[in-house]
Amino acid sequence: MLDLNPKRRKCEAMTDQTPIPLHPSPAHMQVAFHRTELGLIMSLYGQMVAAGEWRDYGISCLKDLAVFSVFKRTAENPLYRIEKCPKLRNKQGQYSVVGMDGQILKRGNDLRVVLRVLERKLIRAVD
Image (cartoon, rainbow, N blue to C red; front, side):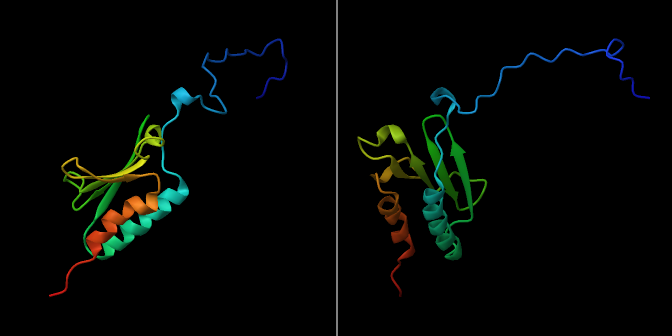
């Protein structure tokens, strides 16, 4: 039975929680790939999967860096890492492709141009 008498109702106190901001402050934000950037990356990824070169990928969104890692096998280290570091936008370029050994293969501000270094891996000499 529902008691509607306000004098007899017991009110429980609300828990004291910090409010969630509508617009997160820059200190709490993470770097992530934009939808158009992911479209370019996933297009290349699809081509490489179809060619049998890549099998798996992983995305990491960190405080200063966003990383798209590609793998030949899931349990291995990534073959390549496509990184986005906005702090380097005015220096060497915010996008870079890093090889398995940590060597930077290509760097620049245009993602399409930077990804061309990986597209060349699809072109092979025919015997």
